[in-house]
Length: 475
Ligand code: FAD
Ligand code: NAI
Image (cartoon, rainbow, N blue to C red):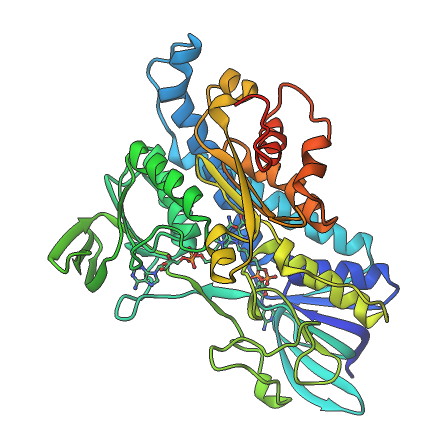
């Protein structure tokens, strides 16, 4: 006999987890199925984000940043450090403990919200009588039945053709987060978000890191001025970033990887590295879902086809997060999950991709929301720009972290803020103000008239907003 639910969620990453919690809050009898296993084979809900993504990468970024500050930053403050060492085993154990706290936190939230959790793989069996039957395989086999199904099965790393991940020499994000000792040399293919974050971690700890990128520009989606500042900073730190390359061959053994590639000028080059991270994007994950059983439509790239409300081709089947179109970000998945639960309850929420903030947790951090200058130019939209460097911000100077700038872009007629771009200290936290301003359709003048505490980094946002009308006060 199938167990009856109002809503069954398949996948417990940020998208599925928030969909399940919001559905339960709205009074639906909700189940959530997730197959991720911890080292002991037990449940590890939280998906890519918690297990091999956002959380462990930020834990390692924090550890490696402490190491870098102790080695290079403290001296300026008059603090002497001698005999500095890094215990990678301990650093990885701390990261694992942070991940487990998050896994346990999600299981606690499920109990608190009376969500029934099933550990195993969920797959469609059939659609009958206005309900979907879903089998859970892996642990104790179960069969569930529900009117509404939310698919949140996430994404997997894309491998380079001919160079499959072995997670020992050729590493996906998973292996990149558990290298057992600092490699002397590290290659990174792809200078996107993962490449720059993970490259930064291992460079700070002492690896000689070379990043090979196919495109001629670094971070093509980022505002050009910000991307140029970032490239300058990363190069100064010692990341060797080679743009416009074509990878021709990768040979891997237990000792390392040998790469043959053509550089931007078309000249043949080679690179030998101890470890190689391949971070060239991610693919939607529908493995094991048995989408065919119910006729769930996928697009030509394997994403589940959805409309702007996350409705799939099937009645009462919804899909959210990395498995559908749009940015592959945890908070985008969460917003979609929450919105779908509310739509099931008859509400009318809206998720605006234009106000979804992006953050790259390198040093300096890069964060933005809204449109870039190059996008506005391409759309032939009139705009004006204000920038403010952290060099002129008192708090940044006191912190000793003055790299970068804030850039505010506003409509040249209405003054509505169209985009805010930050490269610099704590950009990840500062961007929230910009996202809120854009959600409220603020003008640059609105931001310039808001009282910001002194001395704070946030004053750089106010100053950049004032600079739109050429009236920054401190620069
Ligand atoms: P996922 O988190 O991938 O979760 C899907 C879950 O579904 C998994 O647990 C999977 O096991 C389960 N599942 C799949 N199929 C089935 C099935 N048939 N039955 C049962 N369970 C199933 N985003 C940010 O916003 N900020 C960051 O800082 C950030 N850092 C990242 C760092 C790295 C290294 C990586 C790889 C990604 C990072 N991301 C970050 C992206 C973020 O992790 C994803 O956008 C987010 O996890 C997507 O959430 P999701 O719920 O759609 O899918
Ligand atoms: P990405 O899409 O950010 O970057 C991939 C890079 O690889 C691109 O610059 C691309 O031009 C390059 N590339 C593709 N094929 C190549 C090839 N054959 N040779 C050389 N370069 C090649 O993908 P990434 O870094 O794998 O991350 C996947 C997604 O995960 C991100 O898009 C993001 O959505 C999410 N993520 C978010 C984070 C955050 O929010 N801070 C952190 C990490 C990941």
